[in-house]
Length: 88
Image (cartoon, rainbow, N blue to C red):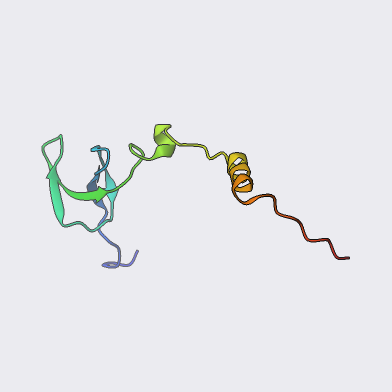
């Protein structure tokens, strides 16, 4: 490996601001804030807006879109669309 071209790989705390959870992992992210972790050591802090603790896919609160209902609602509002004759 070439010296002085790689970012520092260190322990970083990622905090999910929407769920209030935190995780300690390794990263090369550049941060300005720090936080004292449960082990008493101080680590760089990276705040994220969404993580597996708050993402609907992982929490099971994902809503399924009813596309057939959407088409029927559109047709009720605007009527059925007449198709153009096929040209051979």
